[in-house]
Length: 337
Ligand SMILES: NC(=O)c1ccc[n+]([C@@H]2O[C@H](COP(=O)([O-])OP(=O)(O)OC[C@H]3O[C@@H](n4cnc5c(N)ncnc54)[C@H](OP(=O)(O)O)[C@@H]3O)[C@@H](O)[C@H]2O)c1
Image (cartoon, rainbow, N blue to C red; front, side, top):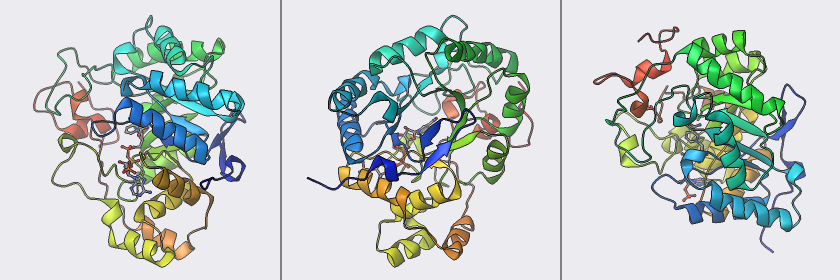
């Protein structure tokens, strides 16, 4: 029997409802490099090695394949209550009549009767076809409109009221947008999913969400080293090649990826690394349980933030020749139309 980690040994985050979410999840975005069946097989391997938290999304196109695996693992003895399954509402389903059916579709594909967490994937109702070029713009694209977002959010709240979903959350948000949502929501977000790795630590947003009882889930925890060329810019850096990360990795005799995951869990976010290789999935999960990095190592890693966002979101811009920074409210106020 190959090595596994006991799910009971994996740390947990307690959400404002009292529910406990495993402090590491398994990502399922195959992008251009892993087909749906490859990702589904990776999920099977991940559950076998001990992951119980799976980060899914309708737009990844693989929820049906992952659903088949989730059915198998439950038949094999993993209880539904042991699993933490997240899915996400895609941008073309923000309409008031679209949210509940979109969630029901994800539930049907995943073979579940409830989700632990359902996120609004992006705060813009701006559709773009999967795999399109970063210069592509939807003619209907719009900036963030709070009134529109809250109409979507009311439907998200309905999903909680009807029991289809246990928690709702946001993704790709900024502080000014979250301030408005927190002001107006009846059910606040339990989680904010955001890019987080040693070269993009987002300290202000990280502190803001934690101060407001929202758990930060960190995507691209390794800096998404295999993302497609179209999602790269010449300024991008690679946390796995950072000399500080490498030095700490050498000292512990582990891969730099393991240092990124350990740093994330110890800092207090929930990383959701993806891997198609069981060996890497296992190494990442093992990193979540220890050993701890020293205070000096944590401090050194805090010092290598490069403010380097990998997922810039260009396809969600609403004007031609617009800078991607407009999506992220860099001045502390929501970018106007
Ligand atoms: N909310 C959002 O808008 C959003 C956006 C982006 C991503 N996400 C979520 O975040 C998840 C993670 O992001 P990501 O997949 O882009 O990037 P990532 O987890 O930072 O990096 C994944 C890549 O790292 C490699 N890797 C993983 N573990 C490794 C290890 N121990 N040693 C060496 N290499 C390792 C994998 O290659 P191998 O397969 O060869 O191991 C894989 O290609 C996604 O799958 C998705 O679920 C959410």
